[in-house]
Structure formats: C-alpha cells, structure tokens
Length: 242
Image (cartoon, helix red, strand yellow):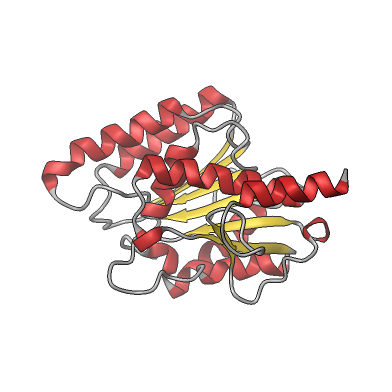
C-alpha cells in the first residue's frame, strides 16, 4: 500500500523533479521531506511579472512558516497562464500535495495568481482556505472594466460550495486594476453566504494602497497576524481584520 501511495503521488506530480507536485514547487529553503510533520502546505500564486522574476511570497507569509506550514509556489510558464488552463493545473497541484501527505492545503494568490485561484474554485476540495489579494486579469483600461467585473462574477457563480471552507478577499484603495471594489466586495460576500463559507473581506483599508498592497512593507504589521489567524484551523476564523 505504501508503494501504491508513492506511485500515485508521482503520477499526480507529473513530469519534473521528485520535489515538484505538478506545477507546484517548494519555495527555496523549504524542507518538504516529511509532509505529515507539517501544519500543511501554503501555496503562493504570484502576480504576472513581465520581463522579470516572479515576486517571492510576501513577508507576512513568514508567519505561516513559523506556524509549521511548508511554503510552495505555483509555477506559471512565462508568468501568464491562460486562466482556465492555469486553474486546471492548480487543481492538479493541490491534489498532488494531498497525495504527498499534507493534511491541509491553503492558497495565497495575488493579482493574476489570485484570479487563477478564483477560476479554480469550481473544483470541489481545491483547498482548505483561499486568500485572494487584488485579483486581476484584464488590465487597467476603462474599456475592460465591464468584462473584468463580469468574469469575476461568473467565477464566483461557478464556484463549488466545497472548494474551500475558508475564503478571504483583500482589496486596496487606488487599485487601477480593480473595476469596482465596492461591487466586488458585495458580490464576494453574497456568494460566500450562499455557499456557507467562512469569509473575510479586507475592504480598502487606509494603508497600504495600490494594486501591490500585499507586497507593501506595512502590510505585515497591519494585517499579518489577522491573516495568520484566519489560516489557523485550531480556532474559529476572524470575521474582520482591524
């Protein structure tokens, strides 16, 4: 049986190194040898980074490492998978992590990475929790705002009630990529209420601001503890962040 389990994990991981889980690879410096000894796997889905390396996990995710989470990252070829294809690859990756023995899997996505996770919510059992920071995939032009909001709405409507029992949406002031933050916050909370999912919305705090608010130095001090508690399954999740 142990051999069969190992073969299943390798099959789900697909081509690549033995350390990979499909499109997921460990963040450099992570020990992935004993999944059962960890709290779980926390997967970083980076924003689109044209012409440069993908941003590393934001500083507040160090709190997850300290709490026993192994940090993984979703590798996107060229940084920009088609959304549907990326969502399918992500679902295969989280299944591969579970096959490896991780008791919990959580996703933290920013910008395009968050939108890939959003589309993947149609997959039952995708993760134990998902954090969507400034989800975006349509650019900043006024002409694309209606489509951006429509696609956001469609993804929420298609989401499986059993995709993840905890969901958080982080929105920032002065985000040129956000077509309508007030509408998105309301749509998200409505969808989570219908699905019976524990939800948290960080709705345009005073700081940090801008599309890259998750990467701002002040973010960890202001909201890192709250988000870490949201991903602590030993307790009920907070309903709001200060």
